[in-house]
Length: 225
Image (cartoon, rainbow, N blue to C red):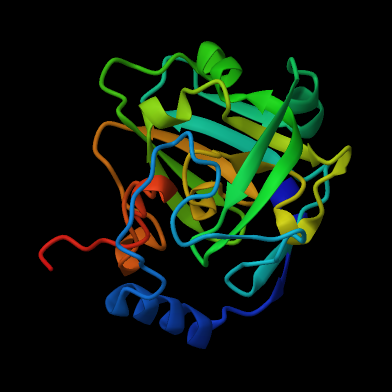
């Protein structure tokens, strides 16, 4: 089976994960401010020129012959794409900013890939589909509302700044949802699951906000405080 050729490098950073979960419990980095989406730098963020590498400690090496993207769940046309089938789809080029929940932002990232709208047109979500769960090759998951995925600035990106996305940044394919903190933009995406009932992902069950709007400073789930 082709997926047996996928290799996982590294090991889960348990201490890092525990520390980030503690950030959520402590409300670290919160400023208590909100801003209009027209303000380029969201509250509590600082602009950087580099692209920091953040992961759970495991990076998959995915040969293109072994790569698959499964799109299933509450859709009329479940689809499995091999790499060549994905790259044959109509492409878009978009520019957007990255906002990381760890308080850095990087402006003017040039992406190339397949628009979320193109994918939705092909798989045809069923009427009861309300949410999406992204599953990654490293075991990571994250969730978004279907309405937030179905936006013209969202894409499945295989290129960044004119070159292939490197492994450490989620290559060969990652999700890009610029309206939310970047943990929602899953790296190494393997499966896109459409569901009727929301399924919080890796960070969402560890105290991070279910939506993650940077301008509303939705870093953590603060309900009940």
